[in-house]
Image (cartoon, helix red, strand yellow):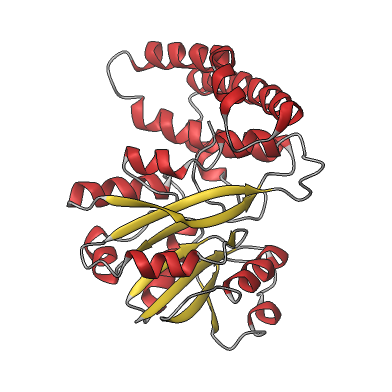
Length: 310
């Protein structure tokens, strides 16, 4: 058995190096592994990073977006299993072994795993880290909704061919692919032992840019429905006022430790949901969702997983 690990990359050499180190520190793996890094238009190809390991192959994809980059990786892959992880994610030492074990069951077709936030310094959490630990990358909930974040996903080549390619930057490609897979008849299985660690965003502006894109996608999807504007306005107001209903989650979540982290999480939650509510109203009034969506994250020079923070 050969497992092809596909990594879209855009100007993240330091993260990529850390991620490749983690992939080469995997334990209890019996299958063969090939790693395909698909560069998506970096200012400099990560040739020095990739050349440190003989099993890492670097290819390029000119069409912008993590979806087209993953599609190129699928074309290049020789494996019996396709495993997807993002360039800024660090695989748990048992990540590949968990994938291998899941596909030992011949009925397995698509799996997604747990995505956790990796703190830079656990003793001194940043403003964003506790919030993202609780509210970001809750992939078990996404899978229950019918899709998995594509930064921690694995499937078979035959399934990928039947579902079709990942979409471009005009849609949230993880949700789109997962829902198409479900419509085709495939269920995504959640594998909690399949763990990757994702860094928290470093600035609040990074978090708002991510939500700008999701808000634009959501509005474009619903704007033609009956009473869309009124429903959207009501949803915006509900989002802005929702932090008061989150105390139970903040107090009980096992993903953070101690009162200080919980207070930070509440403050960040309040700030981002007020922003989201205001941004939703702005999109409604201006009708600029396509301009916002098409800007996506070329502004920041990163290829990001689309799993949503709450």
